[in-house]
Image (tube, rainbow, N blue to C red; front, side, top):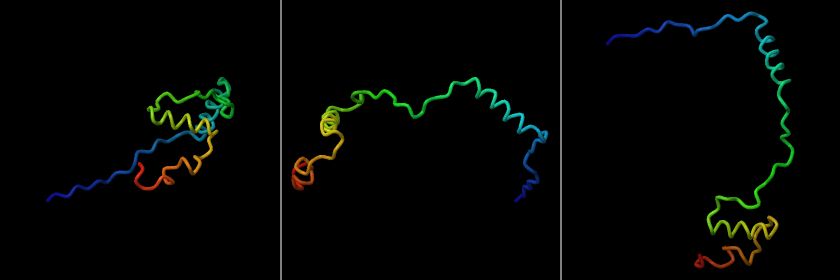
Length: 85
């Protein structure tokens, strides 16, 4: 058996002391040329998701009609008994 000896240190670049402040000044300069995004402004929402399958679309329409509220117990699968699925 041969033994492989790895005797190496990670490669480290020497940077000038003012390198970090120089990099931050470049970032600040670029940020000044960018228009700020309005992350909290309302975005347009599609009236109905396009990728819904027919059964999911029906359930989505029911959810919209209920204004996002949970189904009444009378419509719940659990209230129909175990064999009604």
